[in-house]
Length: 117
Image (cartoon, rainbow, N blue to C red; front, side, top):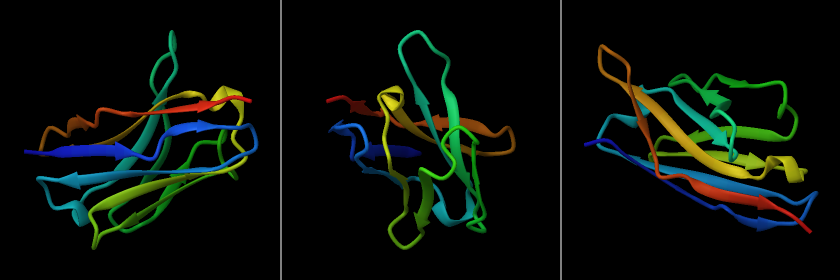
């Protein structure tokens, strides 16, 4: 079955950087688009970035220039490089993919990012 396992979160000071990773299994990774979302307490889950099977990327304006999505098909892994982190970036970060004719959503367990001095 599809599994997505996020890692790389932690506590970082404002202005710092983290690189999140999402290891995927159970499907043909190279054929699927991948996405990163985040969710803060009391807020809706929000899309941050997406990378297509072609490696074309999309990043939302709110993090553009600071967050970079990439993928390594040989490792079945998608990454999110986060730079110039701010306290408001504190959230649980999730990766996502969709499979099947009905575009069923698959989610990892998330990785917590806390930006604080």
